[in-house]
Length: 218
Ligand SMILES: [Zn+2]
Figure (cartoon, rainbow, N blue to C red):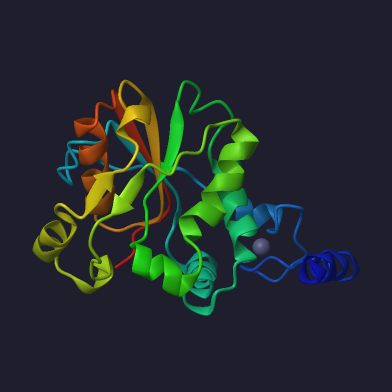
């Protein structure tokens, strides 16, 4: 509580600087030039990557430079306040109403042990406020049934094996017959998202679109 007040007060006295160029930032936490340069939604080529369970997938920014730094700070140094600034990239890149007709936004989950250790799922901190701003229903309907090695440490073949059967739907009654938007912080090969989409389709989802904040991590 006190920390929240202090941060609000500090932001008033010391306006934010853009994390990419250090110029004064606007209310999105970025300067207009960098926001326009960085936040560009791009479609993931599903057929090239054999992501057959997804109906569509896009990513908002490249996983590089300041975005990479902010995400890593969140995950490994627990600097959760970066979530707001990262979430604003999604507002900027995705046209309002683009996901009209979606029944629920479902985050890719962390394993329960990882969640306990970190204290939060960064994907939830980034995407849940965005979903609220868009008037979209947030639904935590997946679980990671076993701990998997970080995807970036593995080869493509290992990644497929690593993700296979690692997810389950916890609320199938809320998924059946629904159109789902699956969200994740980083898209590597897309295999994780495709595995999640597979179990959602098995639970009766009629359509699964994917939206990642950042893509291109290696
Ligand atoms: Zn800038």
